[in-house]
Image (spheres, one colour):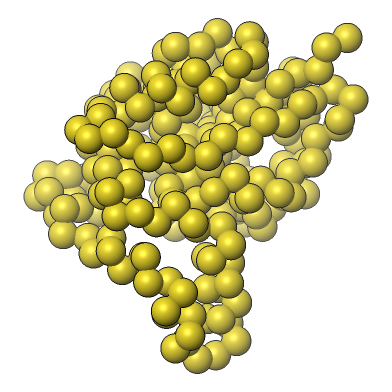
Length: 218
């Protein structure tokens, strides 16, 4: 019996190390990790998704995306024949965007974000005080490595300007009830994870290891 291929796509600025705690039964599943590629000049989200879809080389794969990666996999699904499409800590349409992002879209305030700051995260670490901040910056250094300004400018714009209104009914949505980035009050039809924050792929990995196999197979 062939194993079920499961592809994971990380969130904005994150690398695939965010999935290092996810363990699926190896006798049933075969994990494949995707990472962000550099967007081309003026590349649309759909064009980027078509390019990324070529990295999914199995038929009837499971495609899982976190946060902005969840938005991307929904666009990638247009070009793939999937077994399951799962999003985590994400949104299914622009109607689920939080109010600040809707305002940023209207006012184009997202263009004012100082994305170049993120590239100085190592410098920030040297001057940080307090163990909690240092631990947090260590996490950022490990998991948030896709920090090129061109990518960040592109990704933030694609997230805020995402034009999907009609929800893909095939999407399985897993969402934390304590998500501060995409508050659950704006989310419809999801599997709610109690105490799950926006980074629950790391903090609630035991929940995912227990429940993902069932969700994929059901």
